[in-house]
Length: 213
Length: 213
DNA sequence: AATCATGGATAGTGACGCTATCCAAGAAGT
DNA sequence: ACTTCTTGGATAGCGTCACTATCCATGATT
Image 1: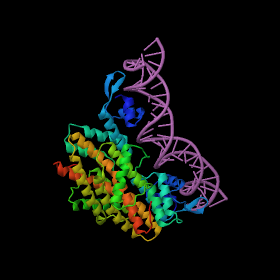
Image 2: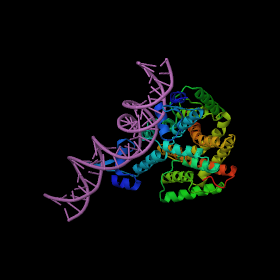
Image 3: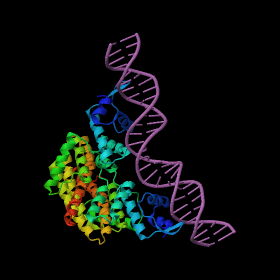
Image 4: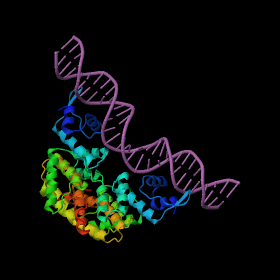
């Protein structure tokens, strides 16, 4: 398949595909002649994944490149590749602040993880994301202590068990990593949308109305 | 408190505060003279909320204005204000597509909600977000059927009960709405970070290593 | 009286994700 | 062989977004 067909089958303009090629999000096609290259199903898959990461997962293009590089790095052990790939994904973490709220947030975050029997890794981007989110809540004066967080943590653990089990169903290591990245990123909007729907449901149930849109 | 102090106490530059005033995210201060205005604690609270929405919740400035306008609209019934405010929040939904995947996604989304006893409101932005996320998953060839989604839905329902209960603790209607918006948006990164941490934990447990960063 | 800060207006900036235009080399059609 | 695409590669431009910098006249502060 040549560029035009790749474009047609993916719904992505050739200009954009060229841009992704330039940015290293897509491997160059197999050169057929000095003016033509051939793309395969693998390219199509990859292109769709890139689109999903960038558009649904709001992953910046430069970040997507890092993530995909880690997925493909056959020289590192599986678990490390996974860590690098998922660690590069955006978490909404802001830079480190030194603040009463930040300190309290760090303590709460650690406490939740210890309580759930998790190993606390402060360098983990997700850990930093958690701290910065909790700190923001505290700064605004909303409650966000161990008791508030525990239900979320417990549910997160349940989801994780479910998801990791799903990933094990894939065969090839690279396919597994790809699935891990895709499922991590793409189930986020699923989870958040369901939460919003559940909130609307619960709000209209409690506050009496018939409909909360 | 004058502009400079508002800036200092919030950590937001005066230029940015002026920008927010222009954009209608902040009400103008009480005019003291033709060249000075006075801001109060309420302005500070609001400013912090705006910052949190924009930076942590990645809510576009223009959207934040709509959300806050709904929160403050004292002419509408509470539940409607809530619906408008939360409905304006971004969901990662993309425009409507007509696709085999989109059709299947719509069916799955409806099925989950019916199964959980929720009223299906297709116009709800969260509903559309769900459909578009599920469709993306399906297009990439990942499983996303009723069985996959049910655990997420069940957990979402649990969270929602917990959160709506929290909101009821606030007194004034406007304060409740503010809390609803803040908690909806700011618990998202908390939930997602916890999920990532749980995944790392579970991955390193299953795939044998000692650390998934 | 001299200096400074203020709010308002307006234009500019930098990052980001494309998008449009050129171009020479080669494929395809006749 | 000759014309007419089409291709991949390079480069520059565009539109949006969230600020940010500069100016200004008025009026507060010392």
